[in-house]
Image (cartoon, rainbow, N blue to C red; front, side, top):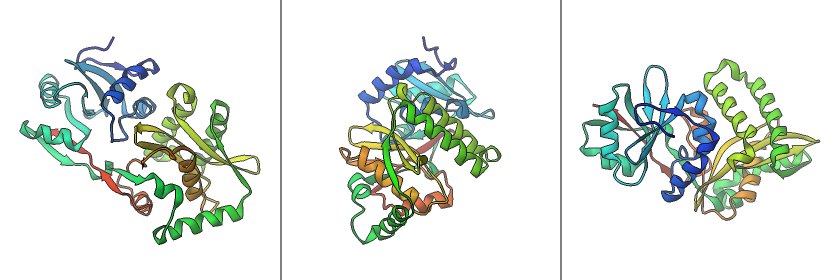
Length: 293
């Protein structure tokens, strides 16, 4: 049972069929709208679910305010947002709102703002697989460096190898002192949830093994019929070109039947923005914040 808004309950693995059905009926472009992201980040975002009329609301409690994702279901969104704002003074924000939904809300007494830090990067799958042309010279050179420095194999993940990657994620986090950086600490928890529930979530993964040990991994899944979304990508920083190598190998293995690859957002982090822009996105998937006026 899902309580009526503003009441809500926690998200569980048993909710996956519900969300899968919602996303199948209305295939998303925005990476936030996968059950994996909703479930894996539930502790970091204080995520619960509620219903309002015929829509499901994903509610996130940040302590000082409550935010909702775009209402999920059939029919117009604007009346659902208007009613949610009327019912709860605490739910003052809607986030990760698509351009189409933002346009629908123009008539409401709300403030609509672009949320650049949470725009998704969308790439041509063929570009990331072939890395053809002068614009990818640097990427091919970095991959060549990695291949020259390690004797490696690329492996697709299953439940067993996923837990090997969990050990590498722990090493990566200690190296980066994740416990001292809130964003990395939260990401570490989300990665753990993805590995611990790898088979149940139905995600795909790949890893690079060198000298018997995992040194890089990537996790993703189908976002919509045309797009593979990459949720996580980690590599040993001591090996030059390893990030470029795992990205290329993962896309070769998992994006061959996709038109696009979504590599999620940069969160406004300058280095991450530069890295994502360097792969030449074909376009950005814009998202918006909707605030109570």
